Image 1 (cartoon, rainbow, N blue to C red):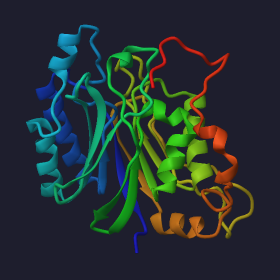
Image 2 (cartoon, one colour; image 1 turned 45 degrees about the vertical axis):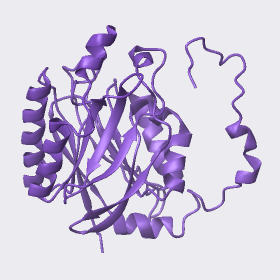
Image 3 (tube, one colour; image 1 turned 60 degrees about the vertical axis):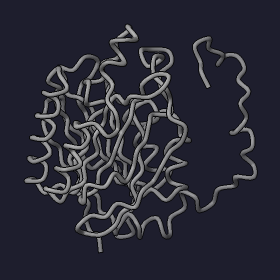
Image 4 (cartoon, rainbow, N blue to C red; image 1 turned 180 degrees about the vertical axis):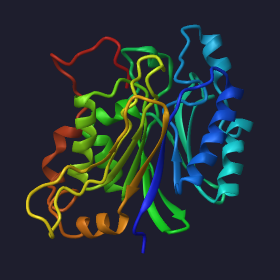
Length: 293
């Protein structure tokens, strides 16, 4: 039985250097463990504080490899704490770096690596390489196994991201973020949780980080309970603007029971009628000169 999965949303400011971010990140993981976390989750591109220089050489100099000391330190700590850690970083990659998330399980195994698919070609991310797929892993926690997927920030704005993760079996989706979280973006996450019957944990940088304002959130995806009449808000946590650790308790067993009989997710879909969704044709008013496949 997995009655509750506790995810620590690390809504924290960066230190301005890789070494400083490493020290602070390790410290906050220890704090999260002391608060009872099963997973500690970082905001988007923690290694550099979501900084994407215009200069190509400077950009590449800030990128780190997937087997760097920075990543290995979090893997080692995950085993020491008996807690999974979802760390984010600017990854060395050819021809341009990637915006990447890695999940280390409580045994220090790298069980999921995901590079942001929907990169913002209209902004600084035009200098990055996009990922090419979405992934789900079976995460072993001391309370039991849970299927975890990941998407990053702008991925949220495409229903296909969470839908693919649901179809691959995700029960919880982890979402590192770095942007102003306001009612519309938060509503997108609420919708992704509702329509796929999944839990969604999103962590943003606090106020003080450029172009960020906190408001990390968690939704459990359970829109109604048999024991109560009417609908309920699936929001279980919404942080304020300040730096801190915000704990989200996901009722995994209840989510699984809910998914076994309710009408959303993959219960009544008709994929044979959705062929237009995989068309690569783009017409006005959606043509953009900076779009990259």
